[in-house]
Length: 503
Image (cartoon, rainbow, N blue to C red; front, top):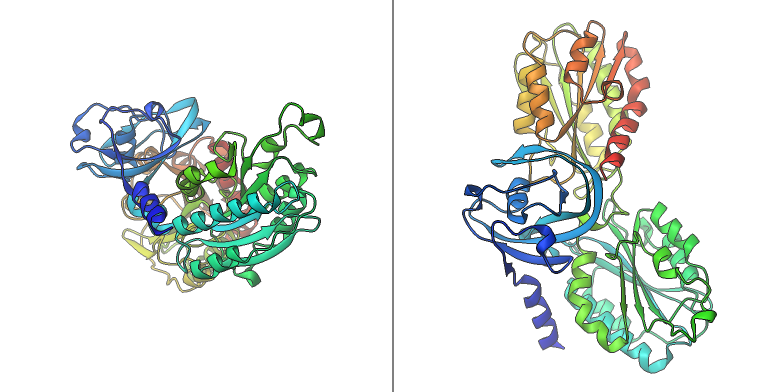
């Protein structure tokens, strides 16, 4: 109803006030909107990590550090997600975060200017239970829940796109990804009840294999989510289909209604079906409720989870969740022909990444004694544009001041407002005329992982002085410019190894 959708929309935007010293672990919900007071920067706050942050961190301190709020405070969305190893220290927006080797849970912080009601851009497949277990009456209640979910998600061309797949003896796609709330509401209203077995695994595999395709409207680079609705328990195995979904970068949520009773448990094919079905068995991706009547009160929290990109762990990979800066030596010792070989090498690296406004981003800076931004991280939002941009870079010709260039990139290319891990690939052919160790350490202090690639006369000790630890994984050398391209996949693997060890 209109009154219900209005109340749900309002509840999404009402923040809960907290203090400057409130920790993430103090919050009662795994996902909520909070309000930071002004003046928190004057307090001595504890912040651990560089997005995500350990949940022991003061929320408002982490929010200022990340740029989600300013020193004047304000609302933000806080998601509590799985813990991790190796929280990195960095300095940002006047706040120094600390390193932490391990913590049980993490915080993902999002400015409310980038929350659900404005920029939710997921591709969502809803697997609808149409089995004989359900019956016509409960099938109707399930359709009511779907209508409310679509209303709250605000489906639209620049928002989430939603489609429907039904279970049964044979899975059936009812609606491919749609950007029209009106079309979806009509499709839900006319959704036929099929009956048959609860072949949830078959329906999940059907959706994972043939639903998120460009020919059916899937947008490149957008998070993919599968919401599985299940009454009772599945009649087939979910593990294989869930594995396929995870391998395909699909985040599976499970909403199960009316869990089997102790008397019914012997009929259940796999007692751990819920744990095996979801993206991660951490409590974030699964929800169990006693009846379809009680699903309504979970529409808001479920919508927020679906629209929290930092928490969608199965869609984040090293190829679609990083920011990469190319720092290119344009000094006179390189020469025009060799400069083109450097660009070929960087092009080979760029072609390995999924580049989009919600995926990986690449920027490039050329330097001599001066620095020139060739294109920023937000200038080109497709692989084709980045490759074309690299091909158009004009050779500068001049001296070599690599240290100044590193400082320039740290201050001008990488922005706190752009989410994702930051990597800097430096390509140089000789010794710098200025200090490089200090600027490189400063870049790493700001959360930038540095990979140093040298050729010709570049001293190995200089490359190691610039590169992040461990040096052997972040330092590369080729005597000839023509040999650079052979390192491209090694560099990509190093980025993926760094990404995997911190996620």
